[in-house]
Image 1 (cartoon, rainbow, N blue to C red):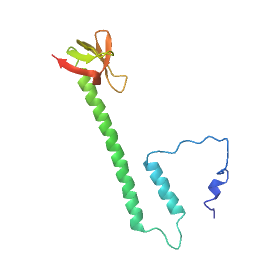
Image 2: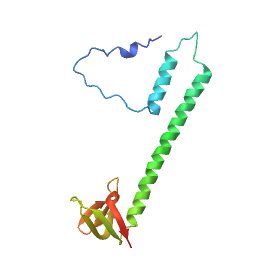
Image 3: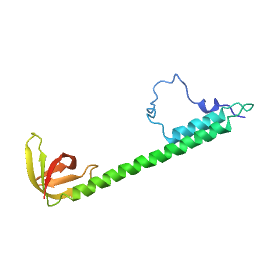
Image 4: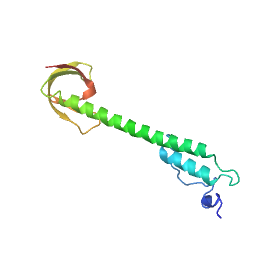
Length: 137
């Protein structure tokens, strides 16, 4: 039988000079599952965890994973919508503010999708899609 202290054999709270990784700032399914497994390992055999509580925690994990997937899907959808909007600008007259805050108008000739926000080529300038302030046919 191994104790929960065996896993800590090579570590010390007072170790100096070792680099540590920053703790996670978000609670993802991996952290949640580790907490559940730790809870199961350290439970008292004479008083095991309530089955309803375990089912509840497992359900919470499944819900969290589905919400994470939905968030990812929404981000992909938004990215696709930006690409569609940017490609619709080609051949149209667009206006934007330059670095000096001066309004510039020109015809959008191409779109670059390399960055997270599409870049629209207007004359010699490359403008972020979110910087375009007006569109004329």
